Image (cartoon, rainbow, N blue to C red; front, side, top):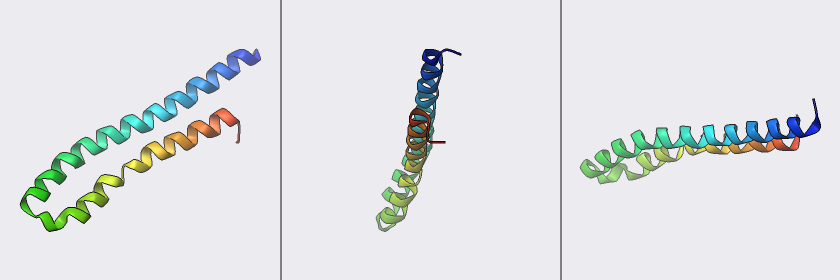
Length: 76
């Protein structure tokens, strides 16, 4: 295959990896955020625990970003 097609496929794959991580993060945080605000409204002392649960899905976009960089730089 020509190098241009391979480069384009790698760029598209990296974009899909990053976008998938971002979409997954948004979907997870939408449910967690709504439930978390309900918990905080009833028990404000649970703020720290809810914050931890809200931050955990952030790892999805970090993993997607790292995978995209790996694909673009041909590390593997």
